[in-house]
Amino acid sequence: MIQASKLPVMEHFYTLQGEGSHSGRAAYFIRLAGCDVGCVWCDVKESWDISPNQYLTIDHIVAAVGQTPTDFVVITGGEPTMHNLTELTSALHAKGYEIAIETAGVHPLKGQIDWYCFSPKKFKAPIAEAYTLAQELKVVIAHPSDFEWAEQHAAKVSASCKLYLQTEWEKQERFLPLIIDYIKRNKNWKISLQTHKYMQIP
Ligand code: SF4
Image (tube, rainbow, N blue to C red):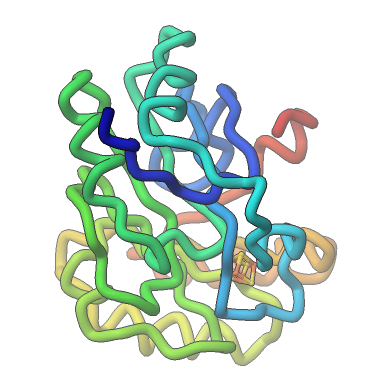
């Protein structure tokens, strides 16, 4: 028997997508282990390292998704473009699932994705491909200068790419009012709230 390919999975669970364009939608999350971006404010630092016991077969992952009524799968991390997603995305598409990825856009995408959410980070420069593939640009605001930084990225994505600003969770008291004010003056942006955190769901 041929051993099915494996990917390191930190956690996988059925929940609601909390943020961005698909916010509020039921989604099966596959959080892959491994990240080489290193954001200082990262809220999933436990995803950075890969341990040998995290590897699951593609069959196992797809079967777990199949235990739920979801039609939508979100591949996140960590930084999911570190991995070759060709087999996973093929297997999920074969079952009819719509697939989104959440990425800092630092590595070429290997796999077929239906929704590319590009969330650039200051700690590792994105590659040019990320701007071409982005259907959603989600910029985390953690410093007043991040608004200008967000505009620099927005200038490079396609005209149809949806633009979101999201406060760093720990600094929301400071930045939420600034984001609201900014969007009122710059209507091409929308706000992204981490609603899963308000709902206290994963
Ligand atoms: Fe954390 Fe995501 Fe930044 Fe990686 S890219 S350090 S997982 S916030």
